Length: 283
Image 1: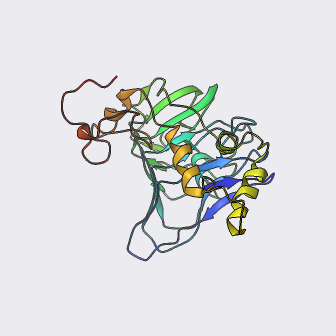
Image 2 (image 1 turned 90 degrees about the vertical axis):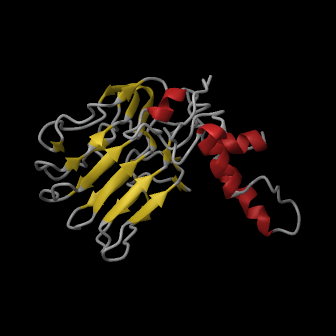
């Protein structure tokens, strides 16, 4: 879980670097921008020996203040590593400053072809109908043929422009998104860290008030056991469970798009990562 609070290109994680010859992954995170800065990255790619880094099952909502998030992964090229975005629920509002959104990169020249190996089964959305991206390079560098591979089977909502920047030969296949879906995923609620604190204690006004509650766990008395990272993580992510059951079979293999199973989905209908079996009607 990461909360970004900065006015100047905040980062949550650097890496992972991985092990030579092996893949690595970041699986199941919750990220939120709670500061006023427009730019920022969940994961800043770095040189490392791993072959692939997969970012999956991550929820990154639109900020309360300005509807922005940050990139899921922004790469400083020069690395031979490649990246995959799979089954994320991501707010991709364009900040109008050329910042990376979803997957992006920054370089003085050009990235390697295929630096994005796949972007599939993601939900990309915005709080209002604006320019919204899942693939958007940073302010420097020039796409080459095949920079972005296997970009398809994503779900978009409130995307006025996007979700892919520079559509053309930079994508393989071209055009991307031939099997994308469009529609309201009907999230339970677009929740935020401050909402969680206020729900538990109405006197809370700012996110720093929540941090103060966390700090009480070190005191002899006065700690409210509801104020834990795990409780926050679970409640926040559960808000991004869709109520539109169509998300559960819109993916590339007939499985789920997005990071979360649909609300109220009977466990008997799930086999593996979002695979629906049986013939019941989910309402």
